[in-house]
Length: 69
Image (cartoon, rainbow, N blue to C red; front, side, top):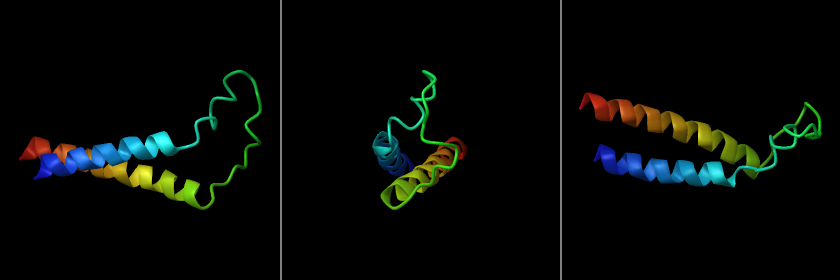
């Protein structure tokens, strides 16, 4: 049961990471501006950002539980 739940969460985590804005950190690599230091997340972007964090924490917790059991 834990393994199936971990697979589902890992797929959701992959989708959430891929949905994040691709150009957010790549512009600064070439010396370009990323729109200023105070960039706020709103709406769906904020949901995807926090959802990614929650899914990552759940994935780590499930991984530890799989090691214990």
